[in-house]
Image (cartoon, rainbow, N blue to C red):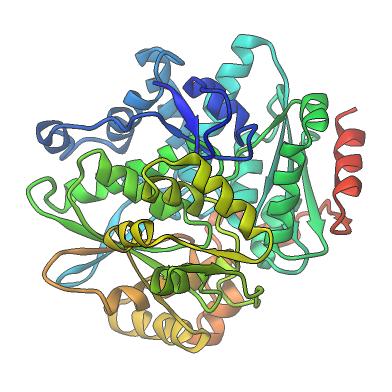
Length: 460
């Protein structure tokens, strides 16, 4: 199994190399040279299997000879052992044809745990084997950072630096990043928005001297391993609802496009997915792009669903790569145009995207109303991001079962949930003392050299 860049000029890598590298040297994102497919019989055999067994079946074709079967099964078992539900990703029925996929039973109460926990295990195994040490730098709009810190805290071969936008994440999200006491994890509050943090990370990867100096590695959704791990819960949920004997549709609240792109990979692997629906908040660049064919930045407005307050969706580049029939040169040109504010997708590629994805948006009022309505009608307390998802899903429901991804626990966004419902969502018992723990925060200007200086000082 080999991996190629979406911009066509970076070296072809193995799975292990692509995982440890993160961003390609030409600025692109790694994708598999070919997407493995599973037979209908192989998919049907997943029914009744554990989440770990399904994860092995789905991910194994992508990892080549990086790990033996026995090694990989052990890593998967360790990755999901700390989840708070035996099913790992349980389905909850909302009404006759609408289901909620609860992805918040991991250590940090968000869907990012599904990817980050297995990435942490794979990094540790690969680095221990090679004797190397790396510096992981990531940007977060809230959940990736806490999941990364949880996955890598205390590991000997890794230093972790997470950039997050100052005062633009929830208090729970911030405290999950700033309260761990291990010396190898660092939360950096940047004076800017998420796109500023993400741009700084990409600039560091493109500064090859710095990249080599600190042995830079990335675990943002630019990392193919992250996307791959998220493919698994599409399979586990679909077979629970009768796949491959019936089609399933998915609505995915997303800002960085990685979670719904994982659904695209699942579909290419043979899972019978009818519709993949992008759900956005008022920062609706993905919805606007799918409506108009023009990807144009308009600035970020803070919302009650902050993890989707994004204008530069990294994984949309992967979607463009396939829409342009894997033409890396064209993708590179469009990403260059994005630096000036945006680009227009060609008619053929736009049609390919429209055939693959549908979309919708939820205003702040509609999001709050969904939180209030779903706890009253269905007894399901939703986080604001999941509420965006169910609101958009309602407009796309039909005869095909609809699964909406619930991406975070409501306790991660208590102010928004309480404002909508008068219910204060409690943290799980294992996190009950979160507000009492001491925080370690480093605040920095939105300045690349200042951020790089902090990283150099900390690792030395």
